[in-house]
Length: 284
Image: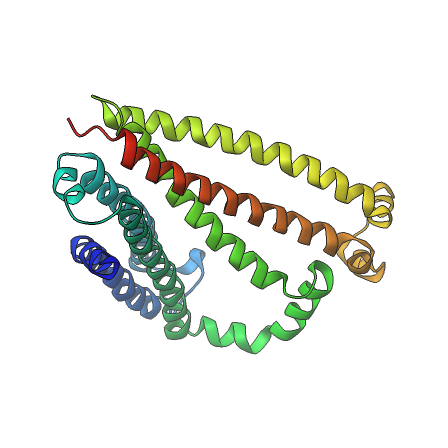
């Protein structure tokens, strides 16, 4: 039944988003061809500037529309009058949440892939990508980043970003579910709930991060001594062996703390959404 719900979600949201994603890719081809002769603002023709401006506006519009569709789909199908139909299905509320969360994650991932693909299209057609690949030594850059921040930190940052994105989506769902318990002005109450939740999350995250960072600073004695010393440039930082003297531990600890907090918040918001949809939902 869950797979049918997910399929229905994509059927309901698949009318607008694919068209916008396709428009971004098509426009990126036009921008790439327009950049073949000139890629500098001082000698770029007005036509090229207009193409690039439209491309940037469309990127922003794609992000906004994706977020609006995610919010609107949950609100209309679970909180508004359409919820009468959805809640009569032989499906648990948590299954509705999972299906909508799956839809939101996949559309968000597709939007990110579209942006990256469009940049590669522009770079490939214009020739800029070839120049970058010819001049840049990515292996050296990756090695230096691993030396400073620690091995595997890039993977940890990607995982942290994914978990944070899921947490933000569930945070919006929780706010709408709380607003759905009101008899009137559900949109206003949902917005207010989101603001309050955001403030609470920010305060808790700041306090936890401060406490954890203080502890890590104390344990990373060599790093603290280095930071309290005279200012040094990036080359001196690497030569001084800062990566092995606590910076990688500090940075990794910060990422780990953020990952754990986002994971806990995501679970709390999921349970909160499920509770309000099950016990406190008011569709009148």
